[in-house]
Length: 509
Image (cartoon, rainbow, N blue to C red; front, side):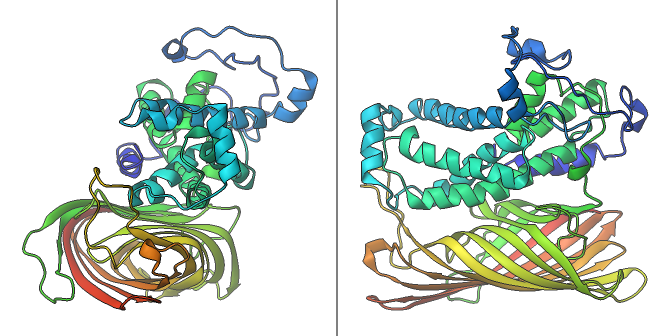
């Protein structure tokens, strides 16, 4: 599901722009006081036409006074969920139960038949580095973490209040959800990646929803939003909020959304050769800017973020990148030429012909917006900071082990540093050229075959978008991808390839 979520966001926002359905406003106005009623446990707060999908629910009595004080009887806004920390914790644990039951139905169910003895064995053993596939560790676990995070957001908790739930969900899964020994790499990637993906998916879901609507359009939006943010969507259907008419949460309403959806073909070169491969591979891509991370005023974490996603082109997921602003402050300039300092959480997933890289980092950045003419703007930015934990494929293993072989990890773990920068040129609000550079330096602490060392990886990219008709663009993109690995006990490795893409893009602003 995680692979198609962002595509659903773009499709839904294209088919149903936020202005659609304003004429369908009904019920409470924005000026009315929020609902102060304490609901019955398990009983929808308002009649819901979707309640039949989940069966009948019987009330079990009013919340006790002490629990009611913890849960909070109010909504922070008319369209916000009720604040229910206890429900958030229970749903976090519930996510683990669902994953455990799902694991029992897969090819190796014995790994998920946990018992108190397996729990005690995991607790006694402590953390280790695991041997799961790169995709499972660097994408699957962060996506699982996003569900923990959104158990908090779906129950009225803030960004920072939801963060401990990811650590709770990850730790309880590692020790009690499966028989494999707990993995420190999973704990880090699930927690940090879960925060980044979770808040992005939560806000993306609210780009699709419009709580002012009724009827068929409302139902379709709620269903699409549930595909993007399952925990929030399920809660809304069960509680009746999916049909309750209200104002949209103001804290989840960006001042602008810009991006492009791409469909095209990618050609990749041979390692250390200038020629490109003659066989092109199809891909689809999405770039989404939720507010302007480099020039908009800061209010709260992830009030501005940037997402880049590419599916295909040689891998199921060839690129997934998130930059979510945690803090921002203007340092100078004016409204037309602002300079901003920011702190951002970064999630990276990169698969190409030279290396596979996944990392969780926090970066500090500076940006400056230049006004070249009445309709032309240029943004210049740079950022860098520590990688809490990164994973990059080993240069010592050239073939991926088969399923019949003993578990073998093909990538190295370690902390390091991330750095990069770029320039974006826009005309009439639409991008016409983009140049970007991303670099990663990882010092191996858990290496394949015990060959500790340093990995230095770089990606340079240039995109050109030529106007065709209205919001459609013909795109040309070129990459130069390079890695240099210096092992302590093995020969150094230097590899590079070029990549080239041609695509049709539909841009929006």
